[in-house]
Length: 19
Image (tube, rainbow, N blue to C red; front, side, top):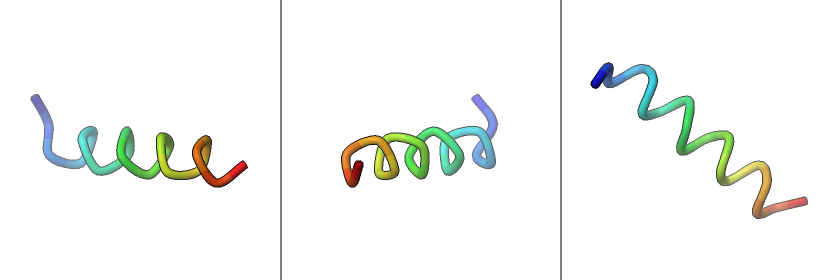
């Protein structure tokens, strides 16, 4: 698993949770 990918997924989840 790519570390950059993990960060991107975490960022996406955070964005979805914020909205």
